[in-house]
Structures are given as C-alpha cells and as structure tokens.
Length: 285
Image (cartoon, rainbow, N blue to C red; front, top):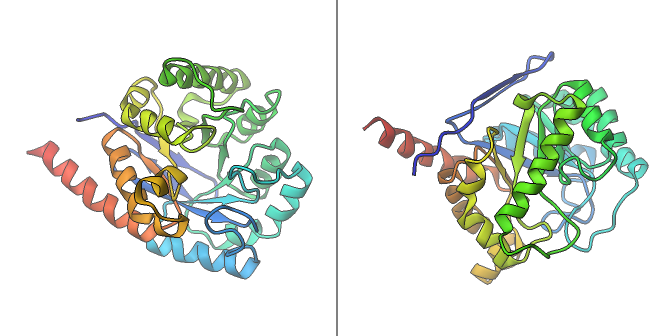
C-alpha cells in the first residue's frame, strides 16, 4: 500500500517548527490529571510535568500534548474554570522549557483561549469543534494555529456503515472550522479510536482506516496508546500494552497516518523510525 501523506509546514513566532509529511511524528502525552486511565497522578506536579516533558523530547517526541482533564470512560468532567486553573499551574513552565510545539487537549474554548494566549501552539479538540456553538473554532481561527479534530459522539450506536458515519462527522467539523475562519491547511483529523466505540468498532475502523485517510486532504493523527481494545487482545492491563500500541501504530502508518499520540515515546519513536526507513527505501527501489 502506498498512500500519499499530506505535507504541512507550521512555524510559530517563538521559532518552533513542525513539518508533517513522509516522516512519522510522535506526540508525547503529558497528563497533568489525577485520574487518567494509564498514568493519572504520575505527572501532576510542576516539577514532574517539566521533567517528563524533557524526557519525552529527548526520547523523540515532536509534539507535547498537555491535558488537564481525563477523558477516559466514566471520568468526572471539569468545568472550564477548573480545567484552566489546573492547566495553568503547569503550562507556563512546560512552554518555557519545551523545544517542540505544545498542543492543548481540551474541548473548552475558555481553557484553550487562555492556553494559546500563554503561548501554546496547537489545539487538540476531542469533540472536533462540535461540543459548543462554534466558539472553539473561532478561538482557533483567531490564533491561526493547527487544530486536531477528533471524532466523538455520545453513544456507541452507529449506522450500518461506521466509516460513513465518521465521514459525516468530519464533514460537519470541517464545515464548522472553515466557516469560523480556520485555514484548511491548519486542519488535522483523528478517528477517535476508543471514544464512544466498542472494541469491535475500533477494529473495524482500523481495518478500513485508509478509506478515511484517502478521503480528506488533511494529515491524520492516530491515538491508540494503551487503549482497552489492545488490552482485550493481549489480555493485559494498561501498563502492559505498549507493544500492542506499537503494532497498531505501525498499521496506522501503513494506512496513511502521520502523527502518533502515545505514552511510551521512546519505543514508538524507534519503531516508527525503522518503519519509515523501510517504507521509503522500498519506494526508491
């Protein structure tokens, strides 16, 4: 399979750069939450958050994704005020030391506006601009930053063709984004594996992932790190799913994804580097 990846070059006023294209990129997860499913409470102090950010960049992270609210199933939602307060206790120091762009994982436009004003570089919205009245899209447009729009919904109920349902969702997200003034080149899509989807539905989407990556002129992010369906396959808890995560990420790379959001940066960065080398060598042969 030879799926063309979309090329993008993003540059910020602080000198940060991010190039999307043939090279697979790793997004390192920095959860400053007490209750995330895999690493809740491990990095929720300023010192630990800064140390972990440094470690992930050294191990190969091209982006750091900071989240202050857990989005695991059954987690307690925060108000925008609560989320902003928690995030801003860590974000200034993370931004100060990070040598790579910093993404903010939030669906509250108030939190995002505060974070972008502080110098954050990217928007990562797990509701694909469909949580509010368009305010998040307007904030993203006003700062002219890359945005990651993920598929999500309230239930696990889909029509007979789940891929078509995802396409309808992305069509709506793109309409909202473009209408608000977000540049088309700033849009990155994410199929939302593990969000309002059963294990079987996750597998079905992954098996047909190329139908999504070839349908839109956008780069794609894949976030499967330590998800439950991997644990079901392996028979392991969240702490023992990194090898399975890597296998799914390699599948996603073959299907056209460019960015891979993970907890274990070192393993993912090394495996994708070898995968890219083999893929590009084969293309030249």
